[in-house]
Image (cartoon, rainbow, N blue to C red; front, side):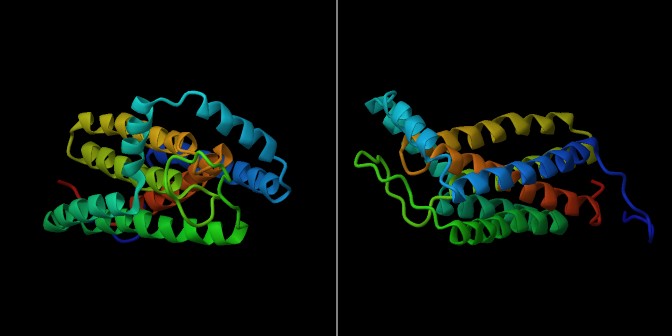
Length: 222
């Protein structure tokens, strides 16, 4: 059942917190971007990458290489198609549009930011993964948090509507995957720590934007 004309849905507390966090993320991203443009963070970035190298082991190499695939474009695309097809069959068009916006829009925003900053990837001979393109912000970090974060919101939101509070549990594995993927990019030496941090900050802004927009679309009641 749709809402009455002119009626605005109450904004969930999670979105209020999300918007506040988003505003803070915009500020922090601006500060970080300024340091990148001024090359003020390079010494710290290089030191952190070198410290991460000291933790290397064959087992950890395999684990991190496996973890990082959760942020690969082909993996995100495959997950997006599967979830999108399921929601289309369930006639969850508003959720599908929100999910697609997080996935496609996040990718376009990341590419725009990369071209804007033109930061080269770590020039290290021991780099343990292949990567091309610019480094700032990390596409894996940004895309995982943007898409999986939006997915977690949509699933938990649906759980509230259908009285399945257990749906909120999706936040823990979703955020854990995002944290591990971001960390893997530094471990594999294809990104500096500030690239990953910037990716997370940009993702918070985009995921919150998509989630907030979803709250003002027509809701599914069952």
